Length: 431
Ligand code: MTE
Image 1 (cartoon, helix red, strand yellow):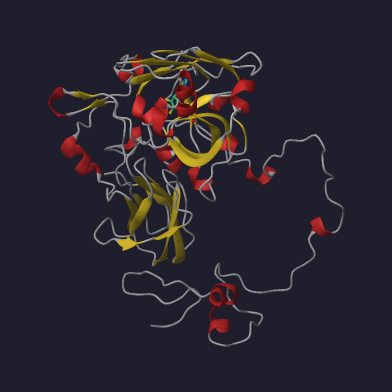
Image 2 (cartoon, rainbow, N blue to C red):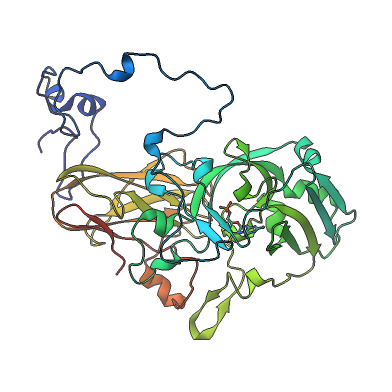
């Protein structure tokens, strides 16, 4: 094997991890040579004298003491957008998707957290907002936002995924980019009060089994949640990514259920009612149920199963000639932590272990990467994750053996392929 700029390679086109010196200085340095003009770096750039840039010749923009910071104007293309596949004319029951292909690291910036709402975003003044707890409790309680924020709080990193994520691309190519196929997904740090603390204070009556969350928006969105879950890890959240929730994500208060379908994390939370049975709301009957074989339907499919996707390179990107590429992506599981991710570059004939980057947190996006030397031939790339329970991300064919893939089907956690053509074009490769 020969040493190159990036490390050694094996027959499977994998490239071993380069040393820091190899990355910084290229082959010449690795071989003991001096870095001379003409040495070639990772992107093929040759060293040359750097002219003094215009930006270094004058003073920059002074601090605006009042401003809320925004990304560089050169990043204006990085924004939430909805898919073109479902064209929704009335714009109230709507969604926008996170640009995962531009997300550097596991946290989604607040302005890029996906949005999904059934009746638009309400404008709620926290001064007037109240949360009520009632039903099968010993003492009904009412809280203002000030009351809630006086409680001790906890902060946790978790992903949030809509069960409709990847819904359009089960069996045929409908979407182009990973934002359109997987962008009903984001990951942030959630801050709030565990729901169990408030329910303990209210005191559960014997026989209490289900909890209802109700939103203060135009859809009065409602969900029934089993009480064990609520007492386990459900948060009543007011903080997201270090600041107060954004209006579109539930300001000033929402429920958040780690690892469960986004629909259960009721935004603009105003009411918690305790009962001995579920309510069977619209989002538990007409919507958010799954078709199963033999005409049956599955209700209350709360958990978001283990899933992963390659975000770089992904649909709509263009490889700039043969050479080394780092395949990157995200893996996550509603059951726990990510244990391993495998990557294929030959359409699933061979799978290779990817590097899983820490921190690897419970029910949180986890980054993976895999160094790949692309030789300029057509390739199909995909990732497959395994979580801490040993659950392996299935193929769509495996899912189809136990579920009915017809119509408006949610909970798509199948392996997702991208094709790379000989000219480097990357496309959605769903069969
Ligand atoms: N809560 C209320 N009150 N109204 C809604 O329309 N949409 C649900 C859930 N909570 C919704 C809601 C759905 S379908 C999802 S996927 C998540 O909120 C999306 O949360 P986000 O918009 O903060 O990403």
